[in-house]
Each structure stands twice: as C-alpha cells, then as structure tokens.
Image (cartoon, rainbow, N blue to C red):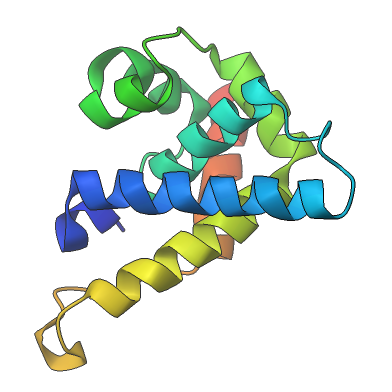
Amino acid sequence: HDLRELIGERRVIELVLREVQALGDALVAVGDEVTLGPRSRLLLTLLTYCYAAGIYSSEDIEWACRNDSGAQYLCANTPINQETIRHFRRLHRMWIKTCLIRATAAASSLQPPFHLAPKPLVSTDYKLDIAIMMDTAMFD
C-alpha cells in the first residue's frame, strides 16, 4: 500500500510533483487555469502523496504534515487541518484520482520484474474509498 517501500520516498515525491504539474498544464491548455491555483496544487500534491504512501485519514494526513518528512516538504511546513483536507477531497476527488493513477502507473514501471515485486499495487479507487471510510468512522 506504500509506494515508498517500492521506489523510495524521494521518487514518490518526484512522481507526484510531476503528475500534479501535468494536470495543471492540462487544465491551463483547456482554459481552466483558475481552477488549480497554488493552494489547490499544494493540497492535491499532499493528498496524492499521502494516499500513495498509505496515509489515508484526514487526521493522519494532518499529523503527517507535522511529522512525516515527505508530507512536511510537500506542504512547505504549512499546517493543514483535517477539515480542509476532507473538504478538498470531496470537491476534487477526480483530480486526486487522476494524479494517483498516473503516479501509481509510473511507479509500477519502476518496480522490479513482477515475480520479484514485494506486493501488488492497490487500486486508486480503493485508496480513496479507504480514506473516506476512515474519516466517516472517526465521526460515527
């Protein structure tokens, strides 16, 4: 569930940054540059990285922003609360899914041959569903 175990933290960060940039470029190309502003790029990058790393609940992501070196780097040590994370995920699930699919696909091409791979990659829909379920369970 953690791409960092397969390809390393630095490579996951590079892939996520590349895919968020590619999505931003695609939105600009169709005239939708306002939609993915700096704050949205930061949150998209952070959530894509966390889901790729197996960090799902908004509470855990908020904690990671203070304690996980990769998350700290991506959010530039800016505190981000769990309500903001949940709100962004609800509004932009498709963006997160797109970036996560592309980063996961790029990571799978970097994996060792199939018979040597430690674990199969988990679907992006599953990761997003787990994040939602964890947040829902927290409030029930």
